[in-house]
Amino acid sequence: MSERRFKKIVVMGNEVDRLGGIGRFMNQVAIEFFDRGYEVEMVGIAPPPDGHFQPMQRPAGIAQQLLMSSQIPEEWTLRTRAHHWNPARRRRYAKRMSLRAEAVAKLKVLLPQWGPDTLILCTQVYGMEHLLEAGYDSNDPQLPRVIGQYHGSAREARHVGDMRRVLRAYTDVERFICLSPVDAEEFRRAGLNNVGWIANPVAVPEHGAETQRKVFMSLGRYDPIKSLDLFIRAWAQIADQLPQWSAELYGEGAERETLQKLIDEQGIPRVSLMGKTDKVGHVLASTSVHVLSSQNEGLPIAIVEAGLLGVPTVSFDCAPGISVLVEDGVDGYIVDQNDVSGLAQRMLELGRDEQLLSQMSGAVASSSRRFLPENIMSEWDAEIAELSL
Image (cartoon, rainbow, N blue to C red; front, side, top):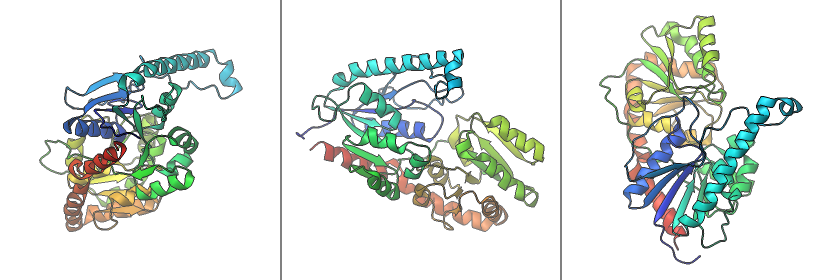
């Protein structure tokens, strides 16, 4: 490849300013590249679903655009005979195909406009599929270069059926960057030969909280993959033993009614579904323990954000990235996957022992600093420099 210095970086994902870790990563990495003197543009495939928009602060000089003019309809696939016979579902499918064509048409114009001085950081495989449909060719020297990402673990990619999509989409891009060394090795074994790994850069969340309340909290959408019912069940086991403590679940999603029904039917005390928050830093800084009960994750930004504010995490061992973020017994706890009693026991230990909680709080505030942008972005600088040769 001829020598090249990239002037522009396009940060591309499914949605811009969507509630959740990927949205916060996209925003942070865009800010960091902008501060390094690049022209930066954020590109989302579609608007976030209703209830999932989370406005984020960034410099006015960072451009932004969406490729689809409206949200992707829910339940649009035609996978069964009943789906094909359902007129409303057929209309949603037609709308979905129209939106995809709209996005691809825009990318066909944008790719040559961006040109070879542009580097696309494609944070999700769905975006890369649109780039390929628009005619992206890694061998065309007049087009941008691409670094691809998958923000789940390799285990999650297999579990949800994404591994074949990842291999099809990212085999020919310049680099594929995942989130942990274990994931890098697993993606290599699956067939990718362009793999590296870089942890997510995480800035200290802004907040105005002055005190930490005795609260176990979660920060994530109300979705089956987050298995928040297991967090609630763990809390139910220990609530009577920690009368001064409570549990708060921040997020939004389709599981809200199911989770509230669980709380009501079992009469679980002092647990609240708090809904979406735009004040992530304030929520984290005003609580004492972060709980992660997911089935699958990549490298959860919430663990680092909580840690930077002195809030340790108790987490299921739901991805290789968890052990990158948490040193079990030192700055948090890692519990066997879906071990609700184990999760409850670790929560109880921190709730009962103020000295232990204080020690872990100090330890995690220190250890989390290795994920600050100034410590992570040098790795991105090295990747870009390598691609510029």
